[in-house]
Length: 53
Image (cartoon, rainbow, N blue to C red; front, side, top):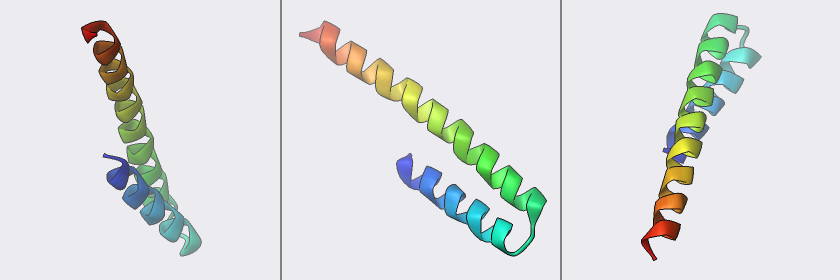
């Protein structure tokens, strides 16, 4: 999942350099959404691991 975040971030940076504002904004938004999903899943995983022991 982190790989997807990095890929979309790189796409956003490259698109911004070449002047494609809409593509850059879209890729950055997708990267943000995937990052927040990753954080939620990480917290759930850590909490479930703590309560399992």
